[in-house]
Length: 516
Ligand code: ACM
Image 1 (cartoon, rainbow, N blue to C red):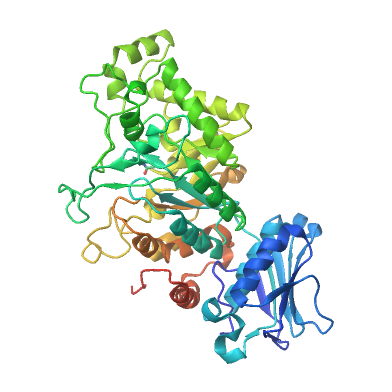
Image 2: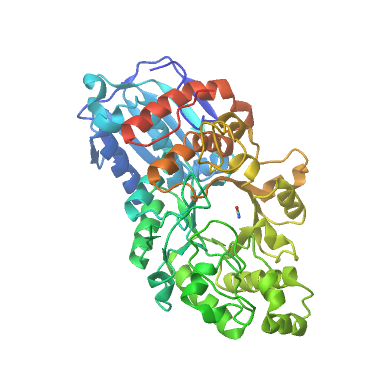
């Protein structure tokens, strides 16, 4: 292997000690001293095709995983140290997450062929170079949004996707489960959300948006599926954060239950939309709708342990509220001067509902327009200026700007990528992103929880296309959110990336070959 360890994201420090390397053999064992590390040990043993043992054999030849709470002060719960010597490898973490990340680094110290052949790769002569690594993430929120409304992915695909996030030490899976084009999560109390709301008649043609493909599309996750995904993610130290859109992007839900929309607005006709644009449907401010939303969130909270619950809040059109006598009367009675204030009213109410249950609301930057609820966090997508404003007001923010983190935007030029949207967002541009805006005062930096990459799937019908949009730009973003700024170097990243792409080849993960 090369003299510079090919780890992405690059660790805080990594020193080749010059000592004899550790030979990996059929007899190598993985040991985990703590029950919290068992799953990590099993995952590593599965990759290396070796066994897990209670303790290291007398002669060494072990990869030892251990918790060392004393490390937490220096490296946090996600930090780790990795020491490889001729006798073995020791990975220590302040918390179990740290040990898991150390395991991912060890994996990348070994050649890509291990992903297929385990210890036998390279004809059985594999070694781990003698190194000392000390590492911890720059940000606690290292996320990836996947839209499963515009196009659905079954459970097995979600698991494969989570595996690639774990390889990059990403830790938030933002699951965009609900939109105008399909409702994708079973809610027991409202079965029509999925029996009706998960199915649309057609989608726009990939190449010609105005033409319908005429092909029905749909699918949803049962609550058992959701539990399975949440547990699978947890074993990879990934939090699954659901997004349930309020009050807009609600056309599919309202197609299933039209009575909860603005039924007295002229032309009210919600559909599970077969087109990609923004639609006028919003939830109506009336008691039965509020009960409907409370019931939905009650079931959602029972499924997702995530502290943060994403409530969307973006692109809610105000026309139907303005046109509905019921909504207008509600605004007047509650002293709300327009649709923006009604939008904020919905978000505040939801924030209160979540806070009473020990959770925190996060929403897209529009939730700030009519005043941000006190405990709410904000995800900036249109412009980082919204995040700067919110952080200055004391709100936690997550950076998800179109400018650098919309991975549905074309990576190559327009000619090459006819089906991608938006302005070209190159690998180098994503790599150059800094989640801390230059103009944000240091006193507010801690408000920036981190950043995430967005994969909106209007033009991504399959997981293979998702992967090709995601990688390697999400690999670049992983380094943005994990590695210290001083360690970032695009040329060096590109050199290390060659190895990661070879690993993707072995794992059957699609990607766009960089050629700029
Ligand atoms: C968004 O792209 N509407 C958040």
